[in-house]
Length: 304
Image 1 (tube, one colour):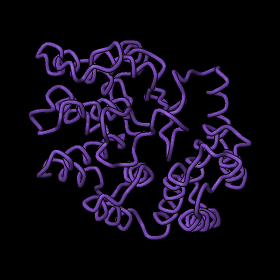
Image 2 (cartoon, helix red, strand yellow):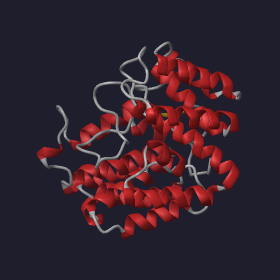
Image 3 (spheres, one colour):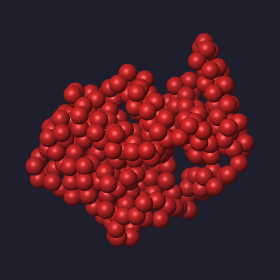
């Protein structure tokens, strides 16, 4: 899932190095004016088996086969990646029947003792619950509206009782959601909550966030964000995925390098310094270098 840089302040927004990637996922393929993006697939590219599988699942408009793929992944009889993409697509459909199914499974997982998936011991309840939560919340959006869902999620952030599914849904909301999270980011009175709100901002695709995220990346200390969590601003710019956001990330990286913002040896990962690791992550997430995307994407930003 999200790139893990140190401890993520108790949030279920990163998968560990061992075991399957967990929770609701961000995957984008064949979207005009936006870069390809995947948290699950290394360098996802059109024409590969992985891309063909993602495209097939994302084109399904009936909830029943999506639920079957997700349940098969939990049992270990289908690809875990396919299962997560299928549950993500199912959330987008806002099916009443399968929101009920997700709620029933969620209740069962909360009460079960031991491994809930004996045929697939590598998967835990925590790996599945955020996707079930997203399915339920997206249905709630259809019934109650974005404002009600926004109020619910924002009320739970100070209590730390939210997960990757909440973050994924939050990033899709209207009703002034992005402005509300920006305001909370700016007003947060601790490094922990500035980092939490910055992480939540990285789930939005609103191009209006580009100037803020690029400034945070270039100078996280000026926003009271620990330097290691400047990576969240990079995540956000990649997820926006427009030519402008890619150029902004490239420019912010150059400013950060010129100022030596991330020169601390403690920020190194494996053989790479902080900025080198971030650069390689662009390939992993999107399949191409920033300069390639900037050359290929159309000029200007348009709302998807």
